[in-house]
Image (cartoon, rainbow over all chains, first blue to last red; front, side):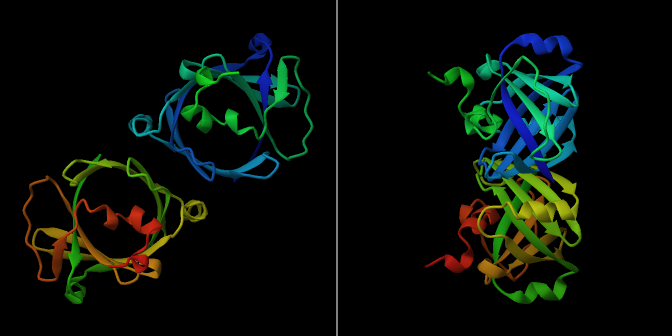
Length: 157
Length: 157
């Protein structure tokens, strides 16, 4: 299926007041090539393997295929992954008609907070909460695959 | 799990007389890195995704994880794969206490025939049929992942 998603910086932790749910995510990459990204993830007590294709020119949509797998299998596969495994806590924050997924990164990406919203169409409008910052959609530095090779704490600017 | 396997050249097509079963295999790679090979395969009307780790020093054993997936999903994932997709017909050939899997390659690897036998232990003995040729175990040129990047018909010797 095609996934349509927009990504934003987060300006403050005000989103926490409206978070309905949160869970830990650990994920690594069996391939960080953006043409055929292969991600292994544990989320709570579940495991997943996910394949993503190249993004559309506008950066908005991307082929995505996901399969739930045994968490023990996911843990074994994480040991084969490239470079840094990503640890983050995901908060689900409903706002207006959409639900933002806010990822608070830990470990080698500590300090980074990113919000994503999944849309039904590329031109779908939605209300923006006050804690939402600049749009990062299509900026490859904020791809989790990139962050697993070049983590946020190693960036200089 | 750990897979223990030995691989051999095939000297003649005499194995065909003892083949009990055969089926078409199409497979491609989402990663050909030998540390984290990710294979997508269709076999008859089934689909599979398989992850393999680095081989042991003797080339005999390798971490392998496989999950059956919907054939439509496998076909969609094959479109994302690197370079050449591999087409082959696999013959199952019982001989003595073991079963040889003999792969007759087609397409960009036409002309290549390889036999593999899966073993329970690295020192397991088995009878060798007269059509079995030189051992190729551990020779990375005969990895299917390598053949998908540098197919047999492109080799010069």
